[in-house]
Image (cartoon, rainbow, N blue to C red):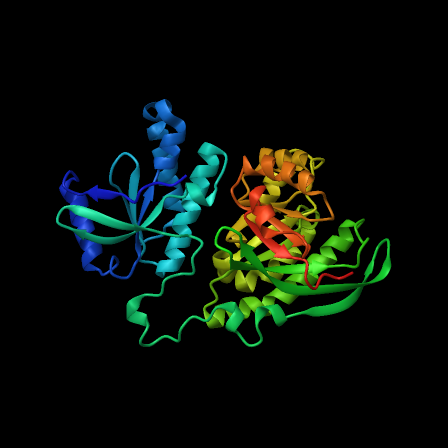
Length: 390
């Protein structure tokens, strides 16, 4: 849902709030890109005639979410019926943007049952002058904008494909013992994620692959594979921290491992030294989800791990899986593995998934399948099959 970028009048604000706006401007936060405008217009449009009756309940939720996400000395001001200004003084512009996006995702998930990117109405305030607030739409999929003042002193941010070695050359091969197969090869690599509407790389995905036919894995196997994937990812997160990495990094993690307390604590504790980077850049992609998982377990697991990641997504295989996982929690997106399926079968799953989220990934797409055809049936992102273990 696209919303126009607002121009908000400050003339009707009470004197105390007008003074706060002036202090925010005087502190240089607007010039540094650290003042944002969050709009509830997508929620209002969906709720329709019920908005008048529910608006104060919604605003109570907004204030609770902001209190939780914006520590002192950050401030927020309700400007009108659907707009709130947030000034970030405790961190940089990009981290402030991430916090604002998370607040909006939380509200969208709670009141609308979804949190698609297109519903996030976030703007960066460009000026507060002459009784008006002007703002520019924030593209939340774009790399962060570096403050102009820092360009003379800070090294330029390098995108992952320019690092040495490039992300796509960071490959691990090895063997491990699987419960039903004995010693088995594995391969971990990093693959580009293609955004189909822009025909460009929008993220990178860590990919663990096994030889064909290794589908019946035990919980112990899945925990071991997730641990190996994390170990491969940690040096990349270290580089993200050192080099200013900005591209989203998709990390597959076993739901069966994360849903049990002991392996969850072990896996997340291994990641904890890089929690700040993970919250900024890592998308957790929960694997081995299906419609047979006990009620409440997905919601409980998601709540336990969400603080570690930028967002959570889920892998599904069938339309029934889609309904099951969204009954429990509002994932940011869904992913489907190709698995030699017919295009019509894939289209059916994508149609169901598209009612829940606008972020639909298809992994391991064969070279003979057209990206145009996948886009036509609803896919928004893909990874190719190239380099997949046979």
